[in-house]
Each structure stands twice: as structure tokens, then as C-alpha cells.
Amino acid sequence: MNLGSIRTEVRDNIGELVADFWTDLELNRYANEAQRRFNGEATWPWLLTEGSGSLAALQTDLELGEGVDFQKNINISLTPEGETRMYQPVRVDPTKGFQLRASFGSNQTAQRPQWFYVTSVADGSSEGLYTTTIKFVPIPLGVLEVEYQYFRAVDDMDSDASLPDLPVEYHKALVHYAAGTAWLKELNGGPKAREQFDLYQLVVEQAKREFFADVEDGPLVMGKDEPQYSTRLLPGDQWLSRMPETLGP
Image (cartoon, rainbow, N blue to C red; front, side):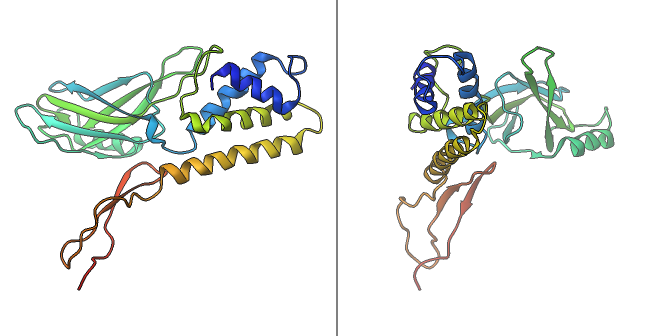
């Protein structure tokens, strides 16, 4: 379902097939707002992206560029030059990271930075974009290869042929949210808006059940000392490994 067909379905819901009270530009704006809201409901797997880079000796900052949702989780792995085994520094909040930088000073270096924090700087454009930068503490003594995972930010749909950045089975959520927003413009349209927002929420909850359910289809390992492992992806910011009680005598 592209932006044009989403707008057509929204018009079906609000009972105005030809633009009059609601313009096409308004409905397009509501649909994009719906997409941003839906993708902000959870850390959806389809937005998880991987990248890589390199950190030179005595370099503390790694700029990730555009398209990073800095409000969500970022995982970092570092591999010192000449080694094959990577390690993961500990993420701290920006306030703690700033304090750590001050406590270590500008001259203290280490082969393995132990902490990092995420900071974002507005790029000054009218679109309100941010540049996401990773800062490492203490200063790396040597070259480091960097691998990272992040949740990408979603671009707005800018033409009728544009497709939403979410699985097709959840496109209907955008229709309901956009229709609900449209009803808020009409006098006494509150009850109709609430009905559409409730339908939107049902699709969100369905998506959460489907994407964040326990994965229980792996082989079952029996025995006293061999537990069964399974993996669960929570709506939070991390993968968690879960080990149930062992099976057998």
C-alpha cells in the first residue's frame, strides 16, 4: 500500500472521496505522522541496521551520519588492530560519559576504551536533523575497527508512489491513525477519532505479539546439565538470553 492508496482509504473512512474539507496535503501529513508514531512504538526488528567504521589512534569521536535514531539503542563492538577478538565497551548516559572524560583528562590513553556514550548535534537545517556521534572513554591508544548496530530513522513518504517503511501487514494502522487525526479537525469528531485510534492500537498490539513473542521452535535439549536455551526479543532496547530450569532428573 503506497501513500496514494493510504490516502484513498483514509478518505473512505472519513466519507470524503474528493478533497474538500480535508486536502490531500493534510492527509499526506497525517499519514507520515502515523508512520513516525508506529515506528516509535517499539524497537522493531525491521529498523535494526548494522554498520562499520574505523577509529584512529587518539581519536575519540565516531560520527555515524544521518539516518540513526539516536533515541534508541546503539550496540558497539571494538577490535584492536592486530587482534581478531572483539569486545564491547560499556554504554553510559551522556552526563556520566562527560564526567568520565573530565576525570581521565585529555592526556590519558588506553589500548581499549572501556566506555562510550551517544551525543547528537542539530545540523542546523530546517528539517531538524541530527548528527549522531559516539564518544569513547578513555582516548584509544591504537587503531580500532568498529562494528555497530542501530535503529535507523524513518524517512517521510514524499510522493504517491512512496511505500511506508514497515511490513505491509501493518499498513492499515497508518490508515486508522491518519483518519483519526483527520476527524479531530471536524467539530464533534472526537468519538470517531477515538474509534480510529483504537483500531490503530489494535494493529500495534498485534505487531508486538508477533515480533516480540518467545522463540520456542528450536530443538529441545534434555538432561540434567544441558538446559534448553531460547531467545526473546523484548520491546525494550536489547536481546535477552533466557535459560529456563533444566529438564530431566
